[in-house]
Structures are given as structure tokens and as C-alpha cells.
Length: 189
Length: 189
Image (cartoon, rainbow over all chains, first blue to last red; front, side, top):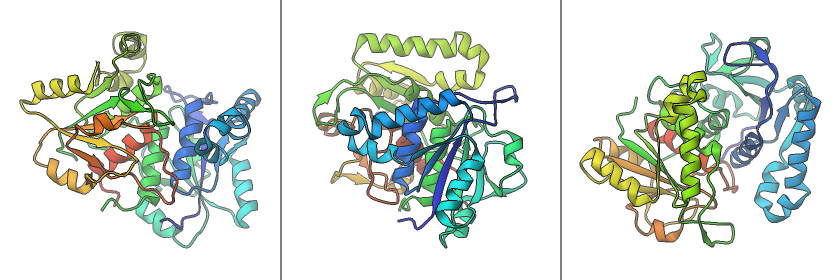
């Protein structure tokens, strides 16, 4: 059981593409469902979907409405419970402001990245630092990851997930599941 | 680093729907990509996509061909490497036969399920049992999970993933990521 006070943000801008250019990525429907379900499993307070694109914000709101107030939620109450944790924001700053308003203090901003970063924080260090209930906003990037402009403004960057070899291309959905399990999952034994 | 000798099977029949009826589920495109990428990260030997439906087998083969021999693979070599680990089979038995032919012995069949089962195996027990390189076929069900008819024929069932509360509805993509990380991931500290 986790006493951690964790929020998630899934960022669609500023992120980089495969060529390292800063872009605004398109929202992936399954990212919304998976983030919501994974967050619900590990006791996450709220998942912020950050995109500055008005049509993408409308799309996310339509999907969430279908599963919370529409037929999807009637047919599948478990999915409704998960999708109710999603909030659309234009920017990461807006998510930070929402958590700050809810908690009465600014959350610690912890980014995730598969790239090297000197400010590396290990998962056990984060778990220990967050054990007193200090709010933490875990930030995930879509496309090929968060842009430096955003990474420059966070408090810490989690160490990358290492698997069993050199392959280093996990979907953001899988990275979120693994990091939350390492952070807040019941011990495996 | 993992010396484990692990194969995955993603089963689309026999699985159950939300009402507990046995069905053949439709293939989800992102399941293929995510399983392949997660498997590649954790050193999985091969991922079998099991569906008895001829049109679904054709669909999977087309998707895999796009990312291995078509434009997708040219544009994205990392994805090609992952997608090359996918194999289409009609049944779980066919996957077992393929692993047996490759390894020279039958793999241990370990199913995953979110439901209670008296044959529960803990992840550390599996890791220990597999440490000598004994091949293991980890079986994941789509839709609402593997049907009893299939579960009756396996050697063991992994204990369900517990999060931080009662919510117990992880996507199969997330369950696979978490189980492989617990089984074969580098230690978090």
C-alpha cells in the first residue's frame, strides 16, 4: 500500500521527434486509457494530459466524456473510474498550478527520460523523499521524449529504465507502468 | 542483466469477455508494438501472437511486414528490431511446439491472470526456477483474460499484480511490462 502523493503529466509539447526537432505530438487514444488505468492501479491522484493544440484538447475531452458520462462509462464502470482521473491542460505549467491549488504547495517536478542527465534521481531515492506525502508530479513525454526546454525547468530527472540489454525504446505507456510499479507497487516477494 | 530464457504468448482465443463468455478477441495494433518493444527491452526470445482467425492472422502479418520489410522498418530501425521478434500462430499449442523445436525441450507454461488461482507462483520463485536457463513461455490473455479451458492446461499461474489499492484492471500491455521488469529488470537500487 502506498502513502505516496503522486500526480502524472503526459506531455505532448514540447517533445522531440526522432530527428531531435521540437514538436507538438498528436494524442494517442490508448495512452489516455493506459495512463488512467495504470494510475488508478497505483493510487495516482490525477493524470494531466498536456497539449496546447485546441483540436487535440477537444478530442481528449470527447474521449473522456464518452467513458465518464457517455455509453462507455455505463457499459464499463471500471473504465469510468479510471478515465475520471484525466484532466486536459494546455501546458505543464497549468498542471503544476492545478496541483499547487489542490495541495497548498508546489509539487516536486520529476521528469522521466531515456537519455542521460546529470541530475539523475533513483527510484528508491524518490520513494524515500516522497514518503512523507510531499506531492510529486511525474512527467512523461510522448514522441521521442521531453524537450530540453522542459527538462531544464524540472527539479529532478528519474534514472532511465534499464532492461536486460541495450534496447532502450519502451513505449511511454510501459515506462509509466514500470516506474509506478517500482515506486508504489507491492513488493514482489 | 538477465540470463533468463523467456518467450511470450499473447492469446486472443480462448479468452473471456466482461460477461465471462469465451470469445476470440480482435487484435489491437498497439499490443503488437508494445509487446515487441517491451520484450526487446527485457531480452525476450520471441513473442507469439496467437489467433485462430484467418483475417486477424493476415492483419498481424501485414503490420509486421510493414515494420520489418516495408517503409516502417526503413524509417525506424529500432522498431524493426522489436517487430522482428513477433510470430503469428493459430493456437497456444503451436507456440509451445515452436519453442520446443527451438529449445529441444518443452517450455514451462506460466499463465498470467488477475483472478485468484490456487496454483499461484510468485515472481521471485519463477525467477529462481528459470535462472538455470530452463525455457519459460509467459502467457498473457487479451480482452478480460485467459479462459479456464486454457488455464487448466498450464504449469503455473503467476500471482496477480497488486498496486496500491483495490483497482485491478491493468491493460495487458502494462501487465506484461510490469511482470517482465519484476522478472528480468535491473534492480532499482
